[in-house]
Length: 72
Image (spheres, rainbow, N blue to C red):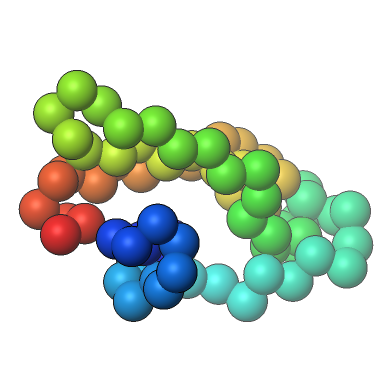
């Protein structure tokens, strides 16, 4: 995830939510041959923290919670 603090002119902060090679040249998800992360969605909670959800290897939905101090 990249964070901009100047309206999108620069993106100096980067957070890796998940590490992987992103291989996705197959539809074989059962044997974990499709290792893509896709369809990200993000919301900001009332306390300022972020909630990110995305597909994980086309097998499940993964949720990551980032407290406000993790994105400063």
